[in-house]
Image (cartoon, rainbow, N blue to C red):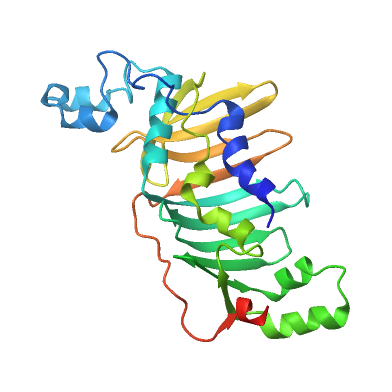
Amino acid sequence: MRRTALAALCLVAVTGAGLTGCQSGGDTASAGSQPASEQAKDPKNSKDSKDTKDTKEPFAGLSGGEITERALAATTGAPSLRFTGEIPDEESGGTLRLDLALDKKGDCAGTLGLGDEGEVELIKTGGTLYAKYDEAFLRAQSEGEPQADVDAVVEMMAGTWTKMAATGADAEDIAGFCDLDEVLGDAGDGSSDATRGKATTLDGTPALTLTEQDGKDRYTFYVATEGEPYLLRLESTSAADPGTITFTDFGKPVPAGKPEGEILDLDALG
């Protein structure tokens, strides 16, 4: 897996659009405003009539930029989350498919795939990275090697859990996908010129849409309007880096236990 794909995840979908988090030097909330979670607790914000409740505007009084800043502050502050979606891989020209749950301890569990070139199932817990590759993935990654060597690797590894030190040279790139702070990268710095859109529902969660443009590139993102103002989805229609990432499972434990059954120790094989 290439680090360019990891950069596309946060830099293209988030910071590449200018959709970055809290400005340095102060609170993201404007004077006299409260975070959405605090508004819900404030008795002054309770509504006595159904009509008033139904017509309440999400993030009333806040600009698109202020909402974006709050959303990225909440998202980067989450102890864990899951992201799924597809983003371009610049080196191969293909599409990287991701479905990973990860936390700030560096644990993760999920799958990575590249176009039609197979898939790898990952678990990282502590300092150990476990990976289970399918045959298509192993053959694609071994392109150009002698056929006999490729066949031997496939016979030994396909469908079998392997393990290696997460800090090793062979594991470093993949292990980088398991570092939540690295994945979210610079999403906590800067400001946003996003424009407010319509209220909607995304997978059952009330949300507000916001858009931002950078030249011909257009970015749409969805922010939860109930509870913490998490980012729920990022969509990029950039010609160079199109893609969609969905964020879920904020704060939930990552299922990163040691796999059962046979495990091939790649470090021991050298």
